[in-house]
Structures are given as structure tokens and as C-alpha cells.
Image (cartoon, rainbow, N blue to C red; front, side):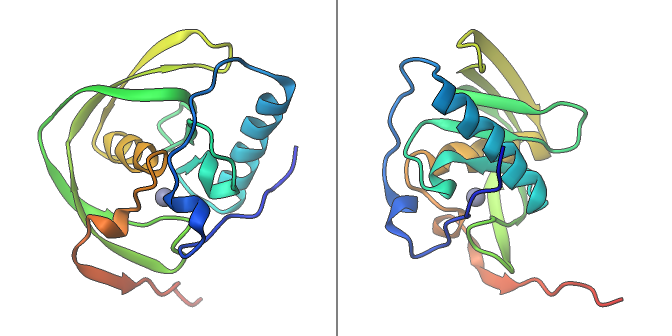
Length: 157
Ligand code: ZN
């Protein structure tokens, strides 16, 4: 396992459409393990494969609700409600902005063993699912931000 380099805004790889994962391989398992390492190291709540330069439809999410989700070929099958809140992205370090997302989503995906799973998310988990799935189609939250991006200064201690 290893921490991979996170691609930042301006890198073309973040604007590409990712490919469907047809089968699980050792290489893809290693990628997923590395994605978790990279996400936790950067203290993020989600990471999509293109953020580490791999154009595959894979995301990992951990919003600290006691579960970590590996979503392969994910699709949102239903959504409802609305929430507007602050969002950030490991590919746009030091920035944040307001984005409106559904408050509840149902996501169909494959897990790491390529078994179909359904993940239901509300609040932050719904936001994270929408944000990470956007990455798989080359969309960044800054495309949807309301009122522009602002800097988030780290608190000094
Ligand atoms: Zn992101």
C-alpha cells in the first residue's frame, strides 16, 4: 500500500470520462488500497480514481459514519431533497464553496468483490457520493459552486 500523488485542478486527467471496471484484478485491488491510504493521509472524506491519475470508475468514501465505502461503476438510481453547504476537494487544496446537492441519494455500485451493493446516503454521505461520482465524468465541484470559491485558512494554534 502506498500514498499516491493527488492531481490538482488544471491537470487534464481530472476532466476526462472514466472507464467502466470490467473485472477485479490485483492491480485494481492495490489501487483501491492506495486510494484509502491517500484519502486518509490527506484527511479527505472521499477520493475518486482520476484524482490519483487513474481513469477508472472507482471511488472510496469515508464520512466517519462507521463505514468505508468502495464504489465501483457507481450510479445514482434515485435522489430527493436538497441541501446547500460548504464543499471542498482534495484536488482544489485550500479552497471551498457552496454547492447544492440532493439531501438523499440511493447509489447502486459494485463492491471490491464485484458484488452489487446499494448504498443509501443522507446529508454529508449524499453530498460525498454526488461529489465523487462527478469526478468520474470529469466534473469538479467548482463547476457547480454558488458565489465563487473562497480560501479556507487553517486554524493556527
Ligand atoms: Zn473532489
